[in-house]
Amino acid sequence: SFGRPPRRDTNARLIESLARKFDALVIPAYCLRTAPFEFTLTVLEPLERPSAGQLDALCESWIKANPEQWYMLPRLRLG
Image (tube, rainbow, N blue to C red):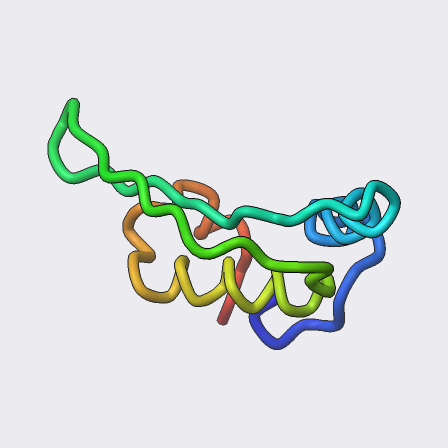
């Protein structure tokens, strides 16, 4: 959310809802481009019943660490 009020129609809320409904673990992962045709996949420890806020903060930390990897960043109008 990058400091904006949380929305109700986000993927984080959907993941939170599905994890609770099916009592499932959430396995966070992200992929970074390391060369034109090479990527590194990072898979983190499973999360048990994470909240949408926790998931949002986790994704936000990935984006802040590698902003050049996120093509949609200019559309966020962070300024």
